[in-house]
Length: 289
Image (cartoon, rainbow, N blue to C red; front, side):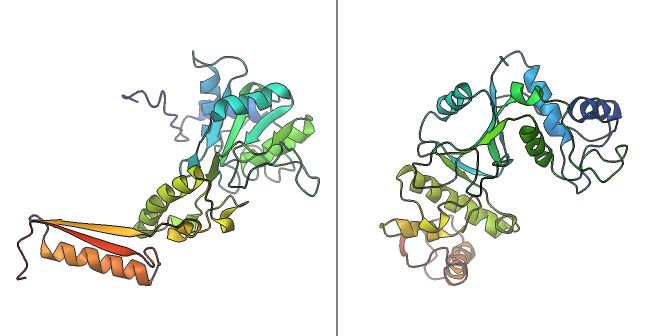
């Protein structure tokens, strides 16, 4: 916030019952202080955040919102905002446009899948036309099986949005957006420190692959990340080189731990499978150890 990268953080702890009653009444037409669905997905903070955006001094009519998870890998190689805005300008019935996933390109703008069913709202990364969304309020919950005083919706709020988009004759669209795309790391890639480190390493490799159009074929058409190892480099032809840098302040034990970690990842996770090593020794003096 101090660096002006973020204007405002929306914190909803669920203890302000008046605020929750207000948001449930406005967005869902329910008299309730619930903040989560029956199956545990939160929705109150998202809706409160949307209201705060619309009330912010910088918001103007027809402005778009990028709704996205905090853990996705995203790559933009063009003026995504301008291209996306043109999609909403051309069709006044478009409420959401899903950020593309890796593909070979050329996919036309669509609102129906191959079976003829309307596309669902992509909760992980989508542009939203906030004014068109708000115009549908209050959203009608579909087949709620629980009392409204306890829960307003059964599952994720995006299912309710899908139902209301169809109910109001609106659209959720998908399609190619030049070479930009996003990937969602599944939970199994975020369970341990090692997995998260691997994810950080491979995310840079993925960005380079997207930038050079050298996409891993097994990832094409899939939103969830297929691998958090350097299998992404199968689409490239350069040799992988790992550099180890030692100096006079590098303890012997730390150097051994580094080599041992490298060996384990090569044999187990195959993170550094078939690669070369360059050792830079910048004046270390523990040769005898």
